[in-house]
Image 1 (spheres, one colour):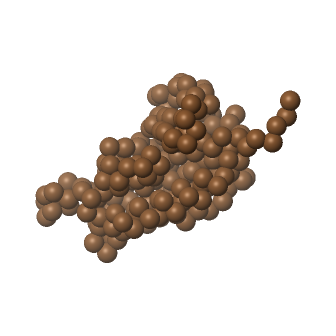
Image 2 (image 1 turned 60 degrees about the horizontal axis):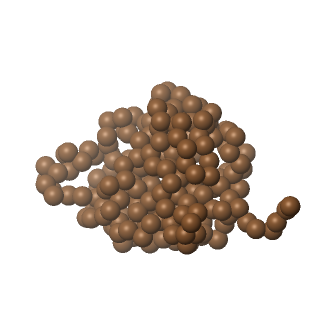
Length: 211
């Protein structure tokens, strides 16, 4: 029997593949660099595990590394550019490693302190909240091609935590995480899957099975 009930909302957060700066652990915000050859390979492998999932929407950061990952995964036919998926603006810390920043600011933590001439925690919180509010008006499986530290903030805000809690949600390159709602308590947001890499794709995640 057919019903008019919408499909439950599931957000597939996909971090882009490897870049030179990600490999060197340099903060890559708005610098528009491409994937490495290995990053391209990661993205193609990722596509094998997403091709059988029907997405109602595919949203990507406007930055090249996210769009390139989306294209190599094979979802570029239905892509929408979403500016709010862009990575944290690191301002004066763009291209720097945390270890070097802490030589001048020993206690620095981006999720608590933000970046001079870049985004501060309240700004990235508001951006994540604005995006979540929009996404909650949709239904079905939605692919989000984004970045490491903004992805951590999105996870924290999805389940109602503060921005500084995002430090506990690291994301590897070319990984999949899934945000959904508890099937027994449909108003309770949950993280159904976190940071699944190509070494751990064979994971049952409730509504979907990544194989």
